[in-house]
Image (cartoon, rainbow, N blue to C red; front, top):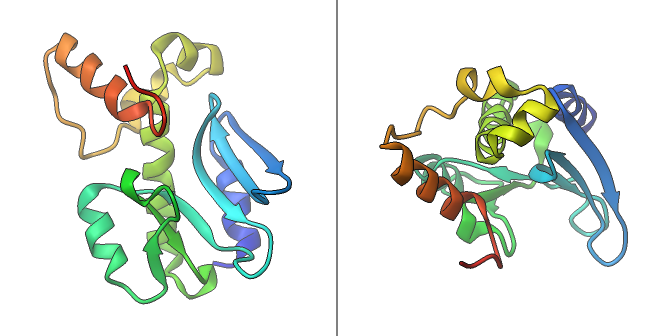
Length: 153
């Protein structure tokens, strides 16, 4: 899979929005419901490095692989960066990006998912590492995890 194919795959996911952020960040961001699930760096020397969120288990597994490292500033939230996309197995990359997308959709409120036409999608593409909890505990855990950096209660 090359960079163009990876970008096309991200664009093909339902309700995905693509936007280019200029200086100083220089990133091409893919988001759903205003929450990011993947991005490409567009400036040198890191041009076309691809970042997205993964499960805790995959984070440890992937960061031990050559050409994969924790994403700058976002590694603490289990984001990884793939240095050279075309050397990474295409099927595995699609699976990882699909998980990042599904996780992001799961973090959206039910009302937001319905507005985007993703109400059915949240249940069918829910990340496999999701733990079934009582409703209040699940809502609190999802809010804490999905808020991301800089948002504290």
